[in-house]
Length: 366
Image: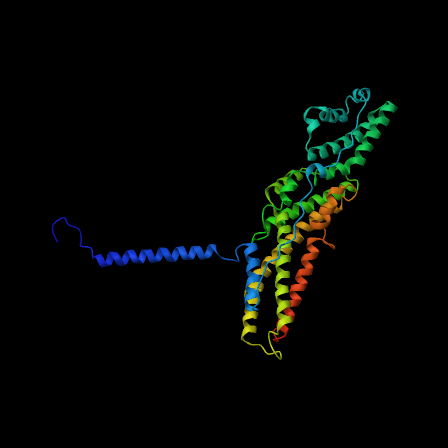
């Protein structure tokens, strides 16, 4: 080797190294590609894959039925209720000098007070009622005292309207229940849904206390609840997931029913090779992949949808007509709701699998 020259490089080694590097890159890309194509990583592909694999092991042709359309929450202008107006005579107002009620009314008549957001309007109504009650013993003029008492009673009577507007009438709830944000994510901890439900449950307790006459409730936390509603879409995702899962479980049950109608999977209750393949698919796909997702959906239903249904139920005296169909379909759990249809699909699906595997002495036990 000449002075100053570098070590000799074997061309074969270079080629071999390049080939190894390229092979590594191809393997890495293939791995990433496979990870990105995992059919169980997304809700819709998870449920579609379950139908496809069931059809395959049963020698059936598969088709996917369209999920039901989830109704949208009525528009804000159709949900909000008109607050009864209350005019206080100017002379009566001036005679309230020294009473807190004068300041409360003055704030409402200010420019900002005339465009109060629903939550601030609820706070105002509560302050008005409390100030009117505190002011009454200080009023010497009987006519003014009667006017203030009537105003306080009127505000108390219309308080449920203010409560409705500050809950189901706010803009933030539209984000919580929107159906434009897909499905519940796969493999979630459920912490977000639980946190949302905890806020709604706390809200429900305070509203029940208000309804029962305890007007001293601290409602400052409601602003944080509204912020949670604005940031998350879990209720709408749960609605979408419920109708998706319902459709796919019905698809699988239909595949099994058609197979049972055509020819048995096993004869004489003795398992065969195909039966074992079917059973393995059932455990590897339904039990290992679909069931955990179904459990996530049921948890969202219990932790969030039921508290939301209660939030509507405790305000039945003022629920606007435009909201009742929506409430019945997506919040309530009774006949005709998406949740009742889900329960029926789960039962139908379970019964179909039990019947099929029982032919082979493989009936799954709970």
